[in-house]
Amino acid sequence: MPRNPILILALVLPLALAARHAAAGARPLTPTVSVEGLDVRLDDVIVKAKTGYAYLMWDAFPYRQAISAAAKVRGLDDAPYRDRVLQGLAKTLLGRLAKRGVRKFKADAVEFPERDEYGAPRWASVRKLQHLEAELPAPSAGGKP
Image (cartoon, rainbow, N blue to C red; front, side):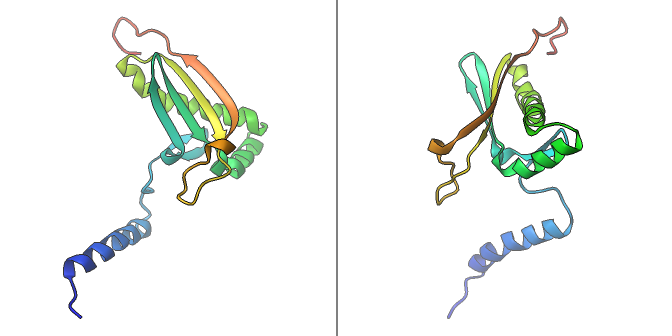
């Protein structure tokens, strides 16, 4: 049976690179944002530009245990801690859009407890946990927000 070296390389190389990456203790392959001591994967955040504002939706379901543990350490209930994380995500991610003139933001912390066979969230089962709306101040005379 003839072997195709390109096919073998295409199959083995990604596995070898991932193993090397993990062994080196490198940063995760999925980018994260650290907010209030919680590392949030950017795969769990949706940012959309809407007319007149920017919208952020954070799937907090994978972080339920981490939120409870971190809130307990800080002497808070889950909801106030989750609100702090949502505010931090909004400031970090949506603040970058302010440079493009976006001043108004809306953000939701939601849970998608069910996913389909492909891993996509089932929108019928979404649970809204918290909502945040904010507006950044107008830029100063120096042009910086």
